[in-house]
Length: 111
Image (cartoon, rainbow, N blue to C red):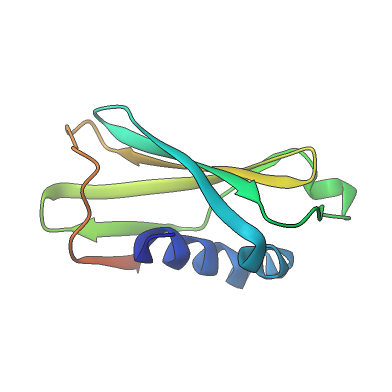
């Protein structure tokens, strides 16, 4: 898992603490670049599920943005949970092309 992917999961886990127990068991299934974003799809190394029925099929985000030198407006992100499992992170630009390459980044609060 990349530094960015782990930082995003930890950021979401601050608001939704139950995500923290899933992080050690997540592995990268694949990454799909879209030109204006990227999907990071996960698999599990152990069979666990989110028990809270309010979070078995939902998309989670925080009020944060990812700043990167290559992108004028940065990246937004969202975590998809399907059937009680962390399914994917979606990274999106705000209309800019992006090659999916991450160098330095900073996660900041949106105003």
